[in-house]
Image (cartoon, rainbow, N blue to C red; front, side, top):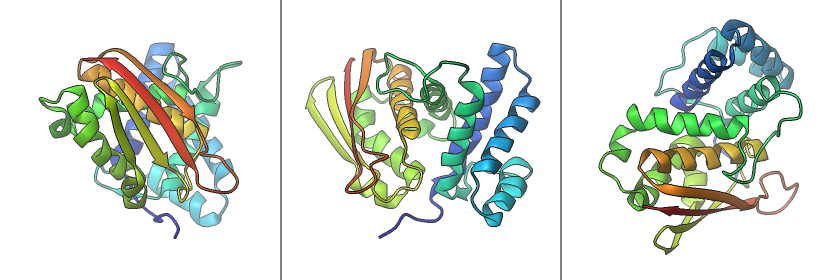
Length: 225
């Protein structure tokens, strides 16, 4: 079984754009120049004429709706290009803990807080952190990664304020340590938004880039409600 050719909700890509705009504003960067540099990086990563045409006509010079369904490879190319352009000399490409930030972590964190106030507001309203982890996050994960990945998601509450999440990236083209950093950021930003205190998320095992075998990733979460 292979991943769906298109399964990611367009609002996640819109969130990347808005994060870049916000980052440029806060760091004194020219937004248009930055987007152009990211577009160039993405074009380099596109391995076919069809992908290059899709990026040019749909992503950068077309219209992406929040409800659009896009191929997973688009976000992979977007994340890698965004990190390459924004991270700065010596900065990490990815992180394995919420204690150490990076561009993709902050992008996930930004998007979680934005979506909590907009398209997915109903999944956050009146939710306690544990309730959101039980019912909200699995639905959001499916919208971002598709039905197959959503079906394989494992959520375990060890005790109050202590969770383990296992994701299966085996059939995901976009699987990478950079993408895992956005998951850490999204979880962290969501729990912050819901009022959780002392949130710590550790990515204790990452096999997203494993060349063979099942690509399972483990995220350990602790927080005070």
